Amino acid sequence: MKNIYLIGFMGSGKSSVGKQLAERLQKPFIDLDQFIEEKNEKSIPDIFAEGGEASFREYEAEALNSVKNKGAVIATGGGIIETTGNQVVMESSGKIIYLHTDFDSIIERLQDDPNRPLWNQDHKKRHALFEKRLPTYKEWADVTVNTTDRTVDEIVVQVVDVI
Ligand code: S3P
Image 1 (cartoon, helix red, strand yellow):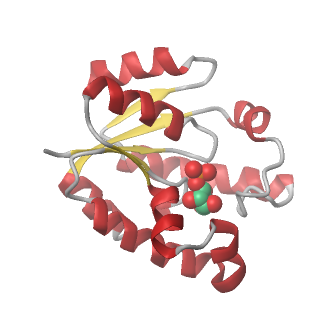
Image 2 (cartoon, helix red, strand yellow):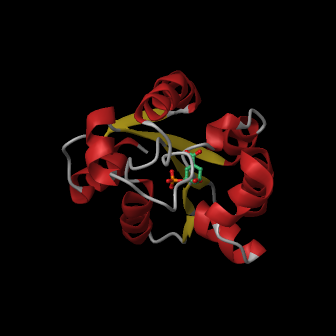
């Protein structure tokens, strides 16, 4: 049984949609960030503080490899697309759904969040990161679903419809 991978920027609803989608499809749900924290017994901010983003990306790629055959709904971290090799792992083991949310809505949803080191920077940098990542999310996705101004229920219905 193949995985369903939810990708998208921080605050696009991957975890809340993923939980509900997994229930609906009767598949296990895995939040990749939580998986990394539990497996390594370290919080994400601590991993960033100790080894920087590069070290976090190694933990992330390793975690992705450990869950690729689980037949689960997987909420990935917003930067899963920063590691080129993750694309082939995901493509070969499941379907990739991109949850797209407008930047303004992301600002409203996240505000300031100390648990997200790459959100915790000045506004210009956040926006540049968003713009830089957009084409890659679209390129990696089998399907794009717009989550701006939509409830989790509505998004889940649409995802079920397109998979
Ligand atoms: C990151 C997003 C986070 C987490 C880490 C890095 C990113 O996950 O993986 O802080 O690079 O966008 P969420 O998308 O669940 O916030």
